[in-house]
Amino acid sequence: MNTEPGRLNPHFQPVALEHASRLINHGPTVLVTSAAGGRRNVMAAAWSMPVEFAPPRVAVVIDKRTFTRELVMASGAFALCLPGSALVDLTYAVGNSSGREADKFARHAIAARPGPVLGMPLIEPGCAAWLECRLLREPHAEDA
Amino acid sequence: MNTEPGRLNPHFQPVALEHASRLINHGPTVLVTSAAGGRRNVMAAAWSMPVEFAPPRVAVVIDKRTFTRELVMASGAFALCLPGSALVDLTYAVGNSSGREADKFARHAIAARPGPVLGMPLIEPGCAAWLECRLLREPHAEDA
Image (tube, rainbow over all chains, first blue to last red):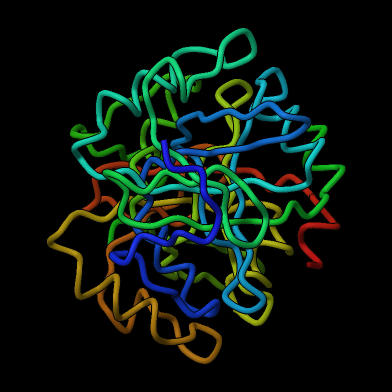
């Protein structure tokens, strides 16, 4: 597992913020990664979408009962990693188990490194792109 | 144009409310239809997603400046129609013009009929499904 910050995979290139929506515009299932207090997690999410071009904002549905939700609320950040078809089984697996009791990265031997801006766990092997995101509070929508 | 209420196309079958999310789970571009005060409109939207299974709720991004937004706020309702590939040109066309000055249904000869529950214009020829939706207010998110 490469967890050395700053060691960018050369296959990944920066995307202008105003074009970030294009990465999820087509409605893919994404991997939501999170980290806080020395713990980390990854879950699959079918429900995410852009909501604004500039400033770039996305919406993603993360159930209140998930460990991911707990980590995101604690850190105020998350990342979206876009798995390719080679990761279909992994995507299904991390979408059908909780990371509260055991680290899914270790269980599934997922290579991840801390993101350059927010330190979120980024999965690059098998993924087409990733986005590090800051949480914007929407209390009414969050409680719905 | 068949605008007679209650004349359901026999190819369209009811979908249980708790399964409604499946109709847009894959992230399709949808046609958002609306009507209020004797006016109606249709626009394309790439940004929609389910947000809850039960009660079934969806989120859709409708720019503040659109005529659709005005009609949806006035009526408190809208519909999502899911175009098939035969409607790709129409979807592009209604996504690149405003219906404020001229009725897009008339301009593009789009057959629509009032929905059975909320009276929203439903497009069935070329569409795989439709959902009539009631607007749930989220003032903070709406103003963002």
